[in-house]
Figure 1 (cartoon, rainbow, N blue to C red):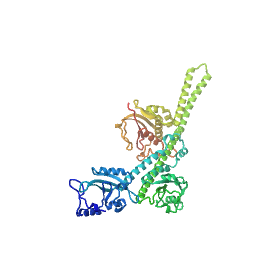
Figure 2: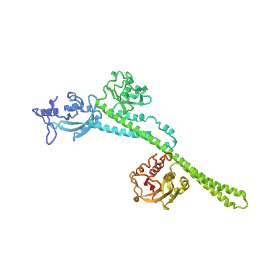
Figure 3: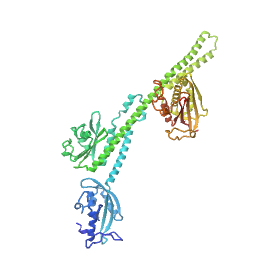
Figure 4: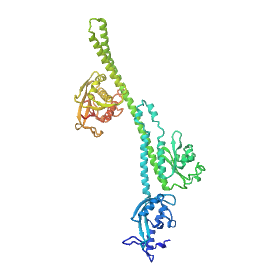
Length: 588
């Protein structure tokens, strides 16, 4: 078969084949082909294989006798016209291209072809020299990376689909309602449908996904793809329970081990025998992470022994990545749900704290309102006793002032107690402090003097007024509790340039030039240095039992962060404490 090719050498001025009269070059050429590890082939001008190296034969899974005389184009798995165009391009210049080939055993392999044109000794008959580099493992890695990217994208999309929008939580008022909202249909099934598409595409197989139900400890069909979608499997509603005697799907789920069936007709446990003739081989892969079982992926092929060892290894790796993604989704979703629960609880505790403060306000307010009612009652009695000898205008003015004073007290109490949505607007912090003076007086003990040092030229801030009021009240309550024997409590406001301050290490570098500082200072017990780092943790408190729930300062911290600000604390035992809350100022 090689008699026509007792010739090959390279001319210095052109590439062509010289006639080898004595067969010396042929012998050398054959020795090179038999001993070289490269994949090499020589094609005639029609693309017919004239000679091919043993290594190239091994790459394609054929012997030399089967390939010599065969069209090289027929070995390409797809796009044969493109390969033919490549050969034509090589007539003018050396050409390189990546092509996929189908081996004799049905496995796909990838080669990077380098093609050059040479001619015979009369410079007439052209030949193509083809050098092939095996890049199958490289392509597998590229597919794996693309699969990882797709799995990640599906995971991110799924998290968006299973997350509850913030608007929905506006209507939730207690934990029972929250638990109901979090009972979302199995996100695993939602995601697994996308992942089944991906793994079937990558392995070029049909498939089905069986999702696991923990409550019934069984697996049921979630989705099928390919020919099995149109066949009996898609309508088969049988639930596979865990265990060796519960079908192949149940067996794989129980053992957590993949199962390959090269010939389903020879498998006694194949329940679809005679019903699903399009399926000839099957590969079942469990999808699980540690002890958490998500389901089983079944891949189907219409060919006998349709899943090579390399393809099964690849499918195993993709299934492993899918299980990691599902576990990440479960983990992140649990975090989202837990965070949302904590958010609801925090809002409830905040409202409870308001109610507790209202209880403290009630005693002082009741006494003050009673004094105003005494004034009103006295004026009325005076009118009755001496209707002709009094100045009614003066009496009515006193009654009106007393009524307005009482109305203002109750209005503040109602405003503070009810739930208010956040609404940020431009506010003057001084006005908030002044409007709360009566409330702060009732919240403080009689032996505490409240001193205001308000900057008259204070910059405006963009904030939610109700939240700012909450910050002021919480800091005053904290200062009051720090001075059981009484003392002076100073509330101060000031304009601060960023260059004048040093934010705590955990605060990102601010991007505002000017800030407004609200400070509340007491002359109380002070705080030990080791306690300072825990002050803003929820439920952390140094007070006695039943004297506080440890949410006041954490609420202050949260409100400051929500307004792109922060809190500084300066304190020493026996020297009192100063809490400074910084808010970005509106540039004027």
